[in-house]
Image (tube, rainbow, N blue to C red):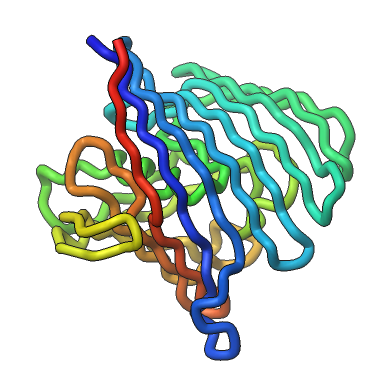
Length: 242
């Protein structure tokens, strides 16, 4: 079986009336699907809005369910080093070794009864991979995920990194045909819901469209409310190498 590599670029823009369609950041990602059933995601994320955020993430996960295996996050905020952390997941425990500007060196070990369903390190491409946690054979509907970890509870992922537990819902809307900068695609449409009380500040309603295949590549996404942000796939390349 061949290694399969997916590369792309996501553009971040604003939908606020005073900044309509203004570029506010970008993300370059690579997903390598390995023969052993593991996917490794590399993501370089840049948010231009002050204080500027630059995030580099390498995350390994189960290719079919996106359950996390291990990951590393390095974060720069306002052109200054913010933190760097390594995370590892087993069926019984989550562990973290990290250093950040605010808290210094931190070691975390959290015992768990069930495997973590998703590790949210804030790359936008990951927001689509997360949707593999929803069983579409059930048809449109909602599923609540109660075993999720974050590397930062901040909406921009601009703190930490360190472990933060939460839960939220995934609503599956259905299939649609959409056009984005990278072309025309058949898409699965999802929403992230039920975030009230889960974060220091409630996340506005969030819609995600991904490719209607086994890859779940982010096509576009958007947050409503005060954020009014838009994310769109502008470039896509898929290669196979033996």
